[in-house]
Image 1 (cartoon, one colour):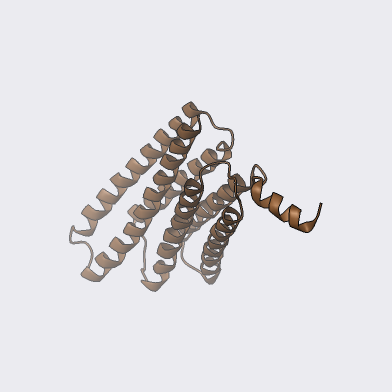
Image 2: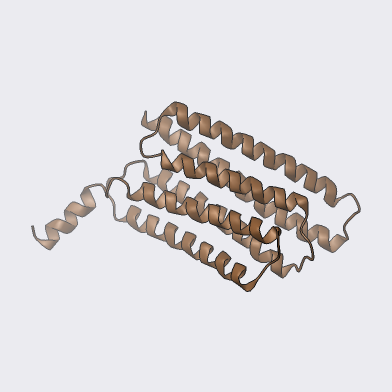
Length: 214
Protein backbone atom coordinates (compact mmCIF):
# COMPACT_ATOMS: atom_id res chain seq x y z
CA UNK A 1 0.00 0.00 0.00
CA UNK A 2 1.45 3.38 -1.00
CA UNK A 3 2.05 6.10 1.56
CA UNK A 4 -0.67 8.20 -0.07
CA UNK A 5 -3.26 5.43 0.16
CA UNK A 6 -2.13 4.64 3.70
CA UNK A 7 -2.54 8.29 4.68
CA UNK A 8 -6.00 8.47 3.18
CA UNK A 9 -7.07 5.25 4.92
CA UNK A 10 -5.80 6.47 8.30
CA UNK A 11 -7.97 9.55 7.88
CA UNK A 12 -11.10 7.70 6.77
CA UNK A 13 -10.90 4.83 9.24
CA UNK A 14 -11.55 5.55 12.91
CA UNK A 15 -8.51 5.79 15.17
CA UNK A 16 -7.64 2.88 17.41
CA UNK A 17 -10.78 2.04 19.38
CA UNK A 18 -9.39 3.14 22.71
CA UNK A 19 -7.38 6.24 21.78
CA UNK A 20 -9.91 8.85 22.90
CA UNK A 21 -10.91 6.81 25.94
CA UNK A 22 -7.24 6.52 26.93
CA UNK A 23 -6.80 10.26 26.52
CA UNK A 24 -9.84 10.88 28.73
CA UNK A 25 -8.33 8.63 31.39
CA UNK A 26 -5.06 10.53 31.19
CA UNK A 27 -6.94 13.79 31.61
CA UNK A 28 -8.71 12.42 34.66
CA UNK A 29 -5.38 11.29 36.11
CA UNK A 30 -4.11 14.89 36.02
CA UNK A 31 -7.29 16.06 37.78
CA UNK A 32 -6.82 13.60 40.64
CA UNK A 33 -3.10 14.27 40.97
CA UNK A 34 -3.77 18.01 41.21
CA UNK A 35 -6.49 17.49 43.84
CA UNK A 36 -4.28 15.19 45.90
CA UNK A 37 -1.40 17.65 45.71
CA UNK A 38 -3.62 20.48 46.92
CA UNK A 39 -4.80 18.40 49.87
CA UNK A 40 -1.21 17.44 50.70
CA UNK A 41 -0.17 21.10 50.81
CA UNK A 42 -3.17 22.13 52.92
CA UNK A 43 -2.27 19.48 55.49
CA UNK A 44 1.33 20.70 55.75
CA UNK A 45 2.93 23.62 53.95
CA UNK A 46 4.01 24.55 50.44
CA UNK A 47 7.47 23.75 49.11
CA UNK A 48 9.32 24.27 45.83
CA UNK A 49 8.71 20.62 45.05
CA UNK A 50 4.97 21.20 45.39
CA UNK A 51 5.16 24.15 43.01
CA UNK A 52 7.04 22.05 40.46
CA UNK A 53 4.51 19.22 40.69
CA UNK A 54 1.58 21.61 40.29
CA UNK A 55 3.10 23.03 37.12
CA UNK A 56 3.88 19.51 35.91
CA UNK A 57 0.24 18.43 36.26
CA UNK A 58 -0.97 21.55 34.46
CA UNK A 59 1.53 20.90 31.65
CA UNK A 60 0.43 17.26 31.38
CA UNK A 61 -3.22 18.35 31.19
CA UNK A 62 -2.50 20.95 28.50
CA UNK A 63 -0.47 18.39 26.54
CA UNK A 64 -3.32 15.90 26.81
CA UNK A 65 -5.99 18.22 25.43
CA UNK A 66 -3.65 19.29 22.64
CA UNK A 67 -3.12 15.63 21.70
CA UNK A 68 -6.87 14.96 21.88
CA UNK A 69 -7.66 17.84 19.52
CA UNK A 70 -4.88 16.80 17.14
CA UNK A 71 -6.24 13.25 16.90
CA UNK A 72 -9.75 14.62 16.54
CA UNK A 73 -8.66 16.95 13.75
CA UNK A 74 -7.10 14.08 11.76
CA UNK A 75 -9.95 11.60 12.29
CA UNK A 76 -12.82 11.41 9.85
CA UNK A 77 -14.69 8.84 11.97
CA UNK A 78 -14.82 8.98 15.76
CA UNK A 79 -16.32 6.57 18.34
CA UNK A 80 -18.57 9.30 19.77
CA UNK A 81 -19.63 12.69 18.40
CA UNK A 82 -16.76 15.08 17.76
CA UNK A 83 -18.28 17.92 19.79
CA UNK A 84 -18.70 15.58 22.77
CA UNK A 85 -15.04 14.58 22.61
CA UNK A 86 -13.98 18.21 22.51
CA UNK A 87 -16.28 19.21 25.37
CA UNK A 88 -15.18 16.37 27.63
CA UNK A 89 -11.49 17.03 26.98
CA UNK A 90 -11.97 20.77 27.57
CA UNK A 91 -13.77 20.22 30.87
CA UNK A 92 -11.13 17.80 32.14
CA UNK A 93 -8.46 20.35 31.32
CA UNK A 94 -10.47 23.05 33.08
CA UNK A 95 -10.67 20.98 36.27
CA UNK A 96 -6.90 20.57 36.49
CA UNK A 97 -6.20 24.20 35.59
CA UNK A 98 -8.61 25.53 38.24
CA UNK A 99 -7.11 23.31 40.95
CA UNK A 100 -3.55 24.21 39.95
CA UNK A 101 -4.44 27.91 39.88
CA UNK A 102 -5.76 27.71 43.43
CA UNK A 103 -2.72 25.68 44.49
CA UNK A 104 -0.22 28.20 43.14
CA UNK A 105 -2.24 31.07 44.61
CA UNK A 106 -1.71 29.58 48.06
CA UNK A 107 1.85 30.75 47.67
CA UNK A 108 1.03 34.06 46.01
CA UNK A 109 -1.41 34.97 48.80
CA UNK A 110 1.09 34.02 51.53
CA UNK A 111 -1.51 32.54 53.84
CA UNK A 112 -0.02 31.52 57.19
CA UNK A 113 -2.61 28.83 57.87
CA UNK A 114 -5.26 26.92 55.93
CA UNK A 115 -8.89 26.69 56.99
CA UNK A 116 -10.81 23.47 57.56
CA UNK A 117 -13.21 24.52 54.80
CA UNK A 118 -10.36 24.67 52.27
CA UNK A 119 -9.17 21.25 53.42
CA UNK A 120 -12.70 19.86 53.13
CA UNK A 121 -13.07 21.30 49.64
CA UNK A 122 -9.84 19.62 48.57
CA UNK A 123 -11.04 16.28 49.94
CA UNK A 124 -14.32 16.68 48.05
CA UNK A 125 -12.36 17.28 44.84
CA UNK A 126 -10.38 14.09 45.44
CA UNK A 127 -13.67 12.20 45.81
CA UNK A 128 -14.99 13.75 42.59
CA UNK A 129 -11.79 12.97 40.66
CA UNK A 130 -11.86 9.38 41.96
CA UNK A 131 -15.43 9.04 40.71
CA UNK A 132 -14.36 10.41 37.32
CA UNK A 133 -11.68 7.71 37.20
CA UNK A 134 -14.38 5.06 37.59
CA UNK A 135 -16.61 6.74 35.02
CA UNK A 136 -13.92 6.76 32.35
CA UNK A 137 -12.72 3.27 33.23
CA UNK A 138 -16.17 2.08 32.08
CA UNK A 139 -16.91 4.65 29.38
CA UNK A 140 -15.78 2.56 26.41
CA UNK A 141 -18.28 -0.21 27.21
CA UNK A 142 -20.88 1.48 29.40
CA UNK A 143 -24.31 0.57 30.65
CA UNK A 144 -26.97 3.21 31.18
CA UNK A 145 -27.73 2.00 34.70
CA UNK A 146 -24.09 2.11 35.78
CA UNK A 147 -23.39 5.54 34.35
CA UNK A 148 -26.63 6.95 35.73
CA UNK A 149 -25.76 5.63 39.19
CA UNK A 150 -22.28 7.12 38.99
CA UNK A 151 -23.71 10.45 37.86
CA UNK A 152 -26.05 10.46 40.87
CA UNK A 153 -23.07 9.80 43.12
CA UNK A 154 -21.21 12.68 41.50
CA UNK A 155 -24.23 14.90 42.14
CA UNK A 156 -24.07 13.93 45.81
CA UNK A 157 -20.39 14.89 45.90
CA UNK A 158 -21.15 18.21 44.23
CA UNK A 159 -23.93 18.87 46.75
CA UNK A 160 -21.47 18.17 49.54
CA UNK A 161 -19.18 20.73 47.94
CA UNK A 162 -22.02 23.27 47.88
CA UNK A 163 -22.52 22.76 51.61
CA UNK A 164 -18.82 23.32 52.25
CA UNK A 165 -18.86 26.48 50.16
CA UNK A 166 -21.88 27.77 52.09
CA UNK A 167 -20.10 27.11 55.39
CA UNK A 168 -16.95 28.78 54.06
CA UNK A 169 -18.86 31.87 52.91
CA UNK A 170 -20.63 32.15 56.25
CA UNK A 171 -17.28 31.91 58.03
CA UNK A 172 -15.62 34.48 55.78
CA UNK A 173 -18.24 37.09 56.61
CA UNK A 174 -18.38 36.30 60.31
CA UNK A 175 -15.84 38.97 61.20
CA UNK A 176 -13.06 36.47 62.03
CA UNK A 177 -10.96 37.52 59.04
CA UNK A 178 -9.58 40.83 57.91
CA UNK A 179 -10.79 42.20 54.57
CA UNK A 180 -7.69 41.14 52.62
CA UNK A 181 -7.86 37.54 53.80
CA UNK A 182 -11.56 37.44 52.96
CA UNK A 183 -10.71 38.36 49.36
CA UNK A 184 -7.91 35.77 49.19
CA UNK A 185 -9.94 32.92 50.65
CA UNK A 186 -13.04 33.77 48.62
CA UNK A 187 -10.98 33.58 45.42
CA UNK A 188 -9.52 30.19 46.39
CA UNK A 189 -12.93 28.77 47.24
CA UNK A 190 -14.34 30.06 43.94
CA UNK A 191 -11.69 28.27 41.85
CA UNK A 192 -12.19 25.01 43.75
CA UNK A 193 -15.97 25.26 43.42
CA UNK A 194 -15.60 25.85 39.67
CA UNK A 195 -13.42 22.74 39.45
CA UNK A 196 -16.02 20.69 41.31
CA UNK A 197 -18.82 22.01 39.10
CA UNK A 198 -16.77 20.97 36.06
CA UNK A 199 -16.46 17.44 37.50
CA UNK A 200 -20.24 17.16 37.58
CA UNK A 201 -20.50 18.66 34.09
CA UNK A 202 -18.17 15.95 32.77
CA UNK A 203 -20.19 13.23 34.48
CA UNK A 204 -23.43 14.66 33.13
CA UNK A 205 -21.98 14.85 29.61
CA UNK A 206 -20.90 11.20 29.76
CA UNK A 207 -24.43 10.14 30.72
CA UNK A 208 -25.77 12.20 27.82
CA UNK A 209 -23.36 10.50 25.41
CA UNK A 210 -24.25 7.03 26.70
CA UNK A 211 -27.96 7.72 26.33
CA UNK A 212 -27.39 9.01 22.81
CA UNK A 213 -25.42 5.86 21.89
CA UNK A 214 -27.92 3.40 23.35
